Length: 136
Image 1: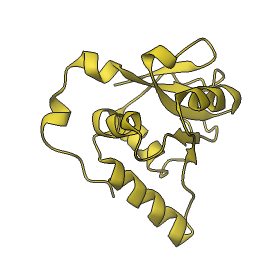
Image 2 (image 1 turned 180 degrees about the horizontal axis):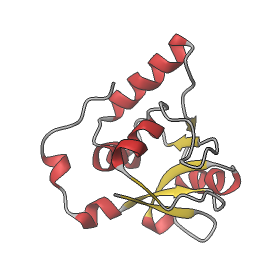
Image 3 (image 1 turned 120 degrees about the horizontal axis):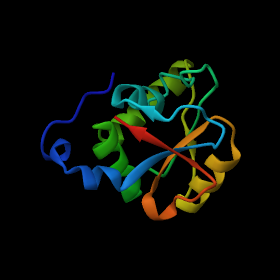
């Protein structure tokens, strides 16, 4: 179970929250996700989109500052909490870790070319090859 963060990270302005956006494969029908669903998907507890299509999760390395900002600002968890959740899934045999990419260019390419994919990008990396998903 992921514990929610408390403190200043949750009290940031909407502009800062918008700096990193959820992105999906262009054929994903979902246009918005709430924080709980997004957290469940990135913690690898929810394996499908609301329409039943399998989700392929992509993440940046744990030490990447964009990954840390995404985890804290969008999911309200610390990156090490996500890693612990992934490790538990893998070591218990109950699931697998998300797909790792080395940078945002690779993230965009993998999400754009993998059906059911979900990832995150800073606004300047977003183009028409990916579908932006709002988070509410």
